[in-house]
Image 1 (tube, rainbow, N blue to C red):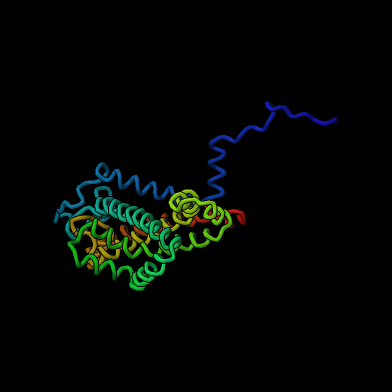
Image 2: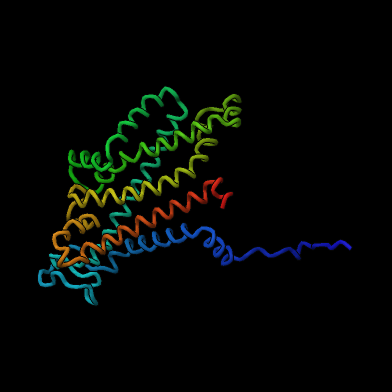
Length: 292
């Protein structure tokens, strides 16, 4: 005798906690990277409330060991390394997120034009190739030395070398999409170019663009730290992991914590961003998702 399944006897939908556990088990890199980024962002936002003045000097407290009074110790000027490290998190996040957003938007616009208009492609891509031929940190140093140093200038100097990488990615996606039958049908049907780009092309570029943005963010954080270490990044009065390490390198044997602690924070942030990017790539790439 055939069994009859009533609507009310349907299997209940998993709860929010069960779905969260399933997502965590299937995407551990996204969860770990996201939690680390949230923790660092929380520290950066709470810096004025959980730290003292990062610029306050107290020569009598020079080279104090990490302890109850100074969690991360003090540097050669008696400044609190904990306060300076937490405030440096703000600089790295601002630079990383700003560069990722600007490079993604500008690269998307230029990449769409290059991939869809052959007349534009030949000229613009040769310019992009020329920019990519110059090491990014050298190009950033050259741009900064021509202007007054400051955080906005540092962001602009890092954005310019990152744009060609995004342009090449978007252009390759657009060229592959133009060969698809539904795009050719839309063009044959008289669909206007702006509508075609916004409705069919742009949505298909978002997944690889988001993944690329995470790698741009990590690269920008490392580049800013390198520029600040060399003395051409943010001004010395702005705490940055790069200039904290640079100022403490001469006293490494006396106070190694002034270099190791900001270096560990830098490594954790770059690791978190890269893990987030790897997880998003595995999640958003249909071929990898089916294989997993």
